[in-house]
Image 1: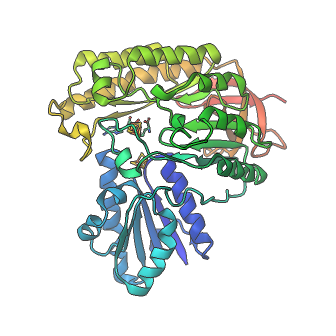
Image 2: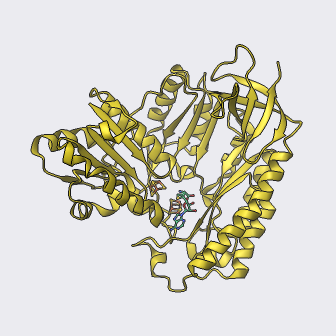
Image 3: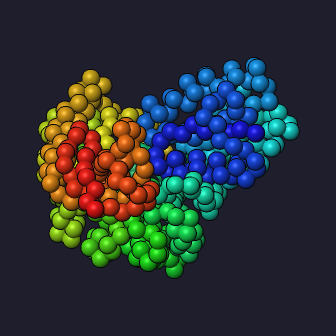
Length: 438
Ligand code: SAH
Ligand code: SF4
Ligand code: F3S
């Protein structure tokens, strides 16, 4: 039997898809790269903006007709769109067999077996106190150096624009003992870098009685031998504690890199977004971080054209880019999400205006990103080697602690997972070129 997986959305979805593949591998399925020879097609969806949400319908438009030639084919849709639509998705898309929600990942093998027997479509999307699937551990493929570990799921923040709390449910933190055990197993399997995942990792453990804090969890992960680098995402600025800032200075394996979404530079917009901080609060945290780790690289998320955002408000977003100097930004046009608080806001920004602001924002950032990369030329960085570069030409590739991509001619004896000192010789548009120092 063959399973074909299509994944949209954030790293948590990528990680969830790995878990699903693992569950089916245990049942004898192998992963196929082409939908046409699959016995089971699973689409793992994202509804954070309208654009990714719509992709599900074009995907189903491609896959459902395959059932004409292969009536035994089973098609399942999971993730955040499945959670949001529930059984309405079955009605809208005849031929779809399974809708499974964000807490039902581990029930999928049973649902597939049921559908194969009854040939009746099913939808299961209840929220559970403890989301199913969080304890499923995908075995990393041979030759992988990095692995993602979900430490918490859900969000209690309800930012006014955001659908995530509605589709992932309330915050739930996995027991720290289970996380430590999983990271230990990954280290034994040869993993050198772990990425701790959650919609809001800074509030890890706060909802559970007698659980440790996120900063304490980082210290425990740091003690695991074999793990050389630790990263995490995503952090909410309002929950960024002093203990977490100190962890960057105290834990050498914690990479000097942080994704810290600010969303908007105007306090009026931030307040209507319900973010719980001002631009000044955010900048103060950045200053503290840079005092603790002067070389720390930052990235961020930005929404342009939130309802009511004036040109002057938008300028304040550009001011933030200038002040913080991020390595990279992920910027989006505001997209109305049904059921969220902001969906009721009436002072919408015209699409044309949003597009224009997005282009200005990205153009402004491109220059900064370029300057930051250019400033690395001549420096020496420790690079975690991930393998031969996609561009070929005998080059290998890796990342610095600051998460910058470096390509370099491969010296004899180099191996995936090595930590090598590399001298940076050239800055390209999105990456660096270097030479390994032997
Ligand atoms: N938990 C993370 C982000 C999750 S969503 C956090 O709080 O930072 C990822 C990003 O999508 C957000 O940071 C935001 O920039 C963007 N986003 C979320 N809802 C959006 C919407 N309705 N329109 C446009 N962008 C949105
Ligand atoms: Fe969405 Fe805000 Fe929660 Fe992030 S913190 S997932 S933006 S509600
Ligand atoms: Fe998308 Fe769900 Fe992640 S909405 S961003 S896949 S949590």
